[in-house]
Amino acid sequence: MLHVRRKYVDYDWWIQVVKSRLNDAVSSIGFKPHVANLTVNDVTFQFMVATPLSKNWYATQENLHSYEMQAVSELMKLQGSVIFECGGHHGRDCVLLASMAGSDGHVVTFEPHPDNINVLRKNIEVNRLDNVTAIQAAVGSTSGNIFIKSRSNAKVSLEQRGINVPLVTIDEWAEKENIWPNIIKIDVEGYEMEVLQGAQKVLERTPAVLVELHCDVVEDFGFSPEDIWALIDTSRYKVYMQKHDAAPAEPITIDMKLTGRPHLFFIPR
Image (cartoon, rainbow, N blue to C red; front, side, top):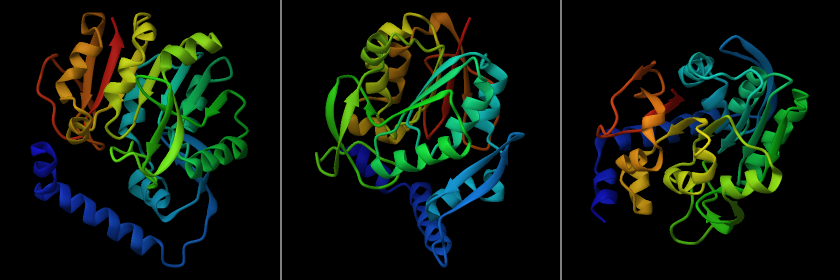
């Protein structure tokens, strides 16, 4: 497949992969799981640092500020909101969202990987978060079961190998539990379009939506990045984009060509 070959010959992609692997290898020397005290975007909390990867992603100095979560707090009404988080990983953003939603809000976080959900639940426990529900499931366009890869990012496996996990849709879960989100946050390693396809009833209610769009990976699942403009009715939203992790969110015009791994913020008009 042409798009896969293009990804694998991209110089910047290889630099990022090699750098990530080297950082994990260095961090693994003498590493022991521990609970750290972190302050991210002025929110102080405890965080279970379970692996060298989570140390590099969450507990290094450069990651003690999140421009993504800064944009969330600036653009979205969080206090008292019901938030669906698709892809919770170890729970760093879940803790931040729960803090910003407050006692009148609620966070429902979906995480399929069994190791990740255990760490996420530990972080819910150590921070005594009673406004969070953690669901061990992947999120997509249909319900049932699906295979994810064993790596910590829990990418859906095209080869139908790996870890077999439950699969839910946002629409079906919301209807069954009668819990409807004001905000949807999606970070699912290229499976974004399937999540949105399974959320059409919820999207009719015009919640705020944050999508981390893995432009090179959505093509693996038969989509182009620009398909997102058809899955979300942009006439109902102002759209902002964070071009990369260390960039601020800026307003954009719709129907633009998307590349890299941008964060898209859909804010109800």
